[in-house]
Length: 271
Image (cartoon, rainbow, N blue to C red; front, side, top):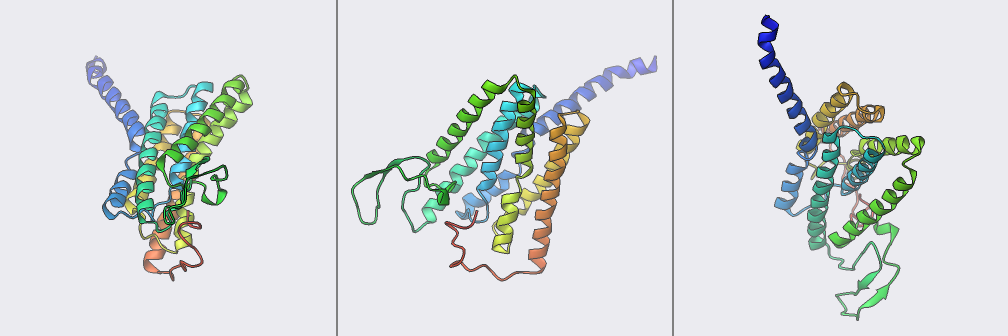
C-alpha cells in the first residue's frame, strides 16, 4: 500500500530523469564547442583549432542519420546528429572567415571549378577545372565550398544507402563506420598538438567537456542497449580524449621547441 502511495512520485521523477538524459544527449555534444567558438571570435585566430574535427563530425553524423533509416535507434541520438551538423557548419563558417582575413595569400581555393582571379595582379577571370587540389582539401577560401562538399557527400552516400537498405551487412557496416568515424574525433586535434609540440590555441575546456560528454554518452549507450557499435566506439573516443589531456599536461610542464614555420607552413601542412 505504501509502495502504491509513492508511485505517484517515483514515476514522474523517472520520467523527468529520462527527459533530462535525452536532452543532455541532444544538446550536450555541442556544449564543448561554445568556449572554442568564443575564443576564436574574440582573438580572431583559428590556428589552435583543427577544422578537420568539423570534417570528422560532419561525416560521422551524416552516416549516423543514414544508419537510422536502416536500423531505427533512439530519437535523441538522431536529433543529436542534426544539431551537431548545424554546429559544425557554424564552426567552419567562423574559422574560414577568420583564416581568410589573416592570410597573406589571397589565391582562391575552391572545392569545385569556379571563376577565379589573382587579385594582386588584377588578372582577368579565368575558368579553371583544376581548382580541386588535394593539397588544399578542406582548406578552401569560402564557406560555400564546404557546404558544396558536404552536400555532395550526403547525396552520394544517401543514394548508395537507398539502394542498399535491404542488405543487413551494409546497414551494420554503415552503423560501424558512423560511430567509428566519430570515435576518431579527437585524432586531428591530437595530431595537430603533436605537430605544433604545443596545445596553445586549443581550448582545454573543450577537451574536458569532450571527455565528460563522451563518458556520459558511452554509459548512456550501454544502459539503453544501443547498437553495439555505439558502445565500443564510445570507449575508444574516451581513450582519445584522455590522450589529448595527457598532451596538455606534458606540453605544459615540459615545453617543446616550437616547430619551424618554414618547414611546416600552417596553410599547407597543419591540419
